[in-house]
Length: 153
Image (cartoon, rainbow, N blue to C red; front, side, top):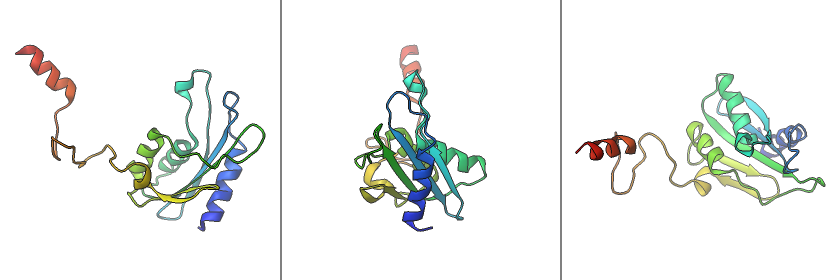
C-alpha cells in the first residue's frame, strides 16, 4: 500500500478518537508484511495512565487478527480546531510495541512531517538479544533477583 493510502486510513481512524481531555484526535494505521492493514485511534481516560495511544490500538488489533511482522506505521493528529499537528512522534511505549513486531528499518510515516525509520526514534530498544553496555548480551538476571541476593549475604 502506498504511504498516502496508509495515511488516509489513519486520518479516518482519527475521526473516531475519544479525546475529551487533550482534544488531540490521533489516528494510526499499521501495515503488516503480508499486506494486512489495521486502523487505531487514541482512547483517553480520566485516569491519564489508562489512556491508550492510536499506534498501540492498531498494532494490537493486528496481533489479535494473527499478524506478527510490521512493515509500516502511519500516524496523524488533529487538534481541537481540526488543525494538523505535524510535530508529533510516537511515545516511548508505542515505539517499544512497534519494535516488538517490527525491525529497525520499519517505516513510520508522520502526517505533515515525512517518513522515518523506527531506529530514528528508538536506537536502543529493550528486547531479547539486546546488548546492554557493561553487561553484554544473552541471558541476564533480573535486578530484583540481584538485590535479593545482596540482601541475603
